[in-house]
Length: 211
Image (tube, rainbow, N blue to C red; front, side, top):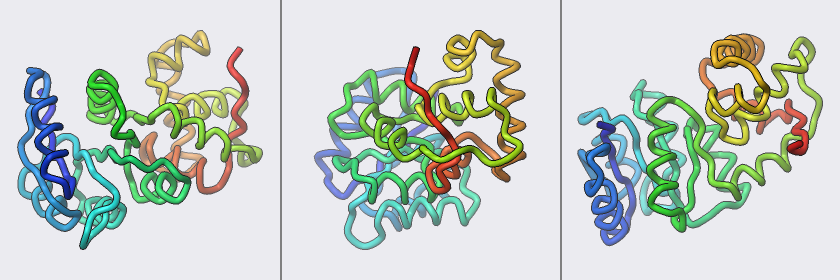
């Protein structure tokens, strides 16, 4: 069972999300928060697997809260859940440490899949967000990153799981994991979300069109 914390300044939104997730036995909502500061405090106390974080809240905003979670060593994965998908919202949130970025018009199943992916430490991006990120990743990769590593990182930036990347590239999952470890070492990061953030901020990946 995946434990969740819902952080949103609108009680009706929190109630709706709680109802959606509590109706499925795979999830359990352990807490709620009305702003970023409360989200950090509750996450520190309850250690949920995943935090669903609104961005624009009074007081402490979502990006500030995401940074605070990372700074305090709180291991909860964060999925931004917002109505906004501008670069000014997406990039700071991912660079702050968000594992995923979903929009509030997502379907129930899309939310379920994104939470499950985040709990596994995998990137979870709404299609429109992934499209925006692809548009930003246009510069050559840093020296030393192999062509295959570029392909793996490009798929990760699109939100692909290890299994999906392996299928796309006709590799084993173990080989994809090995490539990711090499990518992390070369980019100086520790996980896939951070690798995506580096790719976004420094434009390391050239994304090719799907075959």
